[in-house]
Length: 306
Image (cartoon, rainbow, N blue to C red; front, side, top):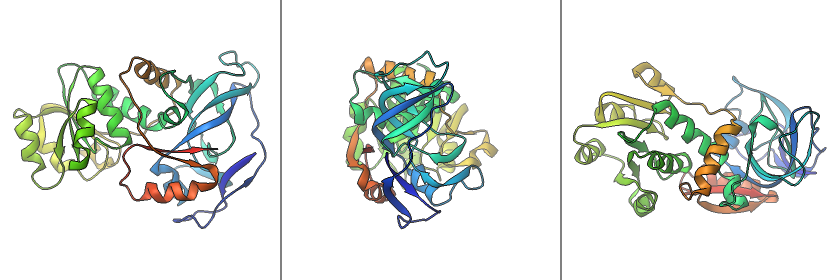
């Protein structure tokens, strides 16, 4: 099969190539997925740069990518959950960095796989897993309910936009920070937008004079603002700043979760969760997708379509 690989850590794309590699093996409890779309996330190029070297082993040459949507082509022993032809999606992170999703085929544990929602096309489904599960895990940790006022830092990003929609689906009032150009987008998702930057505390307080009950930080560097707008007894989490744990918050690191992904699919099929795709790239242009992701200014998901 064809796949993108890198032979050693690199902060740029100089070690990234696309070529032929062996097809993945399919063990007990695993399914073989023919990849139709694989979401690009900042963690993909950060891992390629060695960003998780102290946390996860890497086996070179490594195939990047943790998101996938595709068609089941086979299954290992004792895997009755799925059969050939099933349309599925998964957050396919494994214990070691090696056999990722920027390839024509990937094997994934069946417990991490969910059926693709009919409401999403391949690119949308391929861009959902990591961002959607991160948002879901964050809001579960915050115990979001209909009485909450949720502030989302960087609400127009991949995780932030999912969190806005899940929060609204649970009945919460949602305030989201974003640049002015993304305010109409946030309104379309059901959030009340505020501009980030100087004066943010005052702008949030103008919308929520008694403070917000919950905060999700998707960008980092927002702890001072979070504590300034959080109501007494409020809860806060961050996906980007582990220092929140020293101030009553929780640092979120998402894990593969087929049941959670099925919950996101249910919301999508009910029209409560949408995935905006900014651009799709062929497998031969993974480097270009990484370059665009590194700019940090993309609204919506980037996906690889083998």
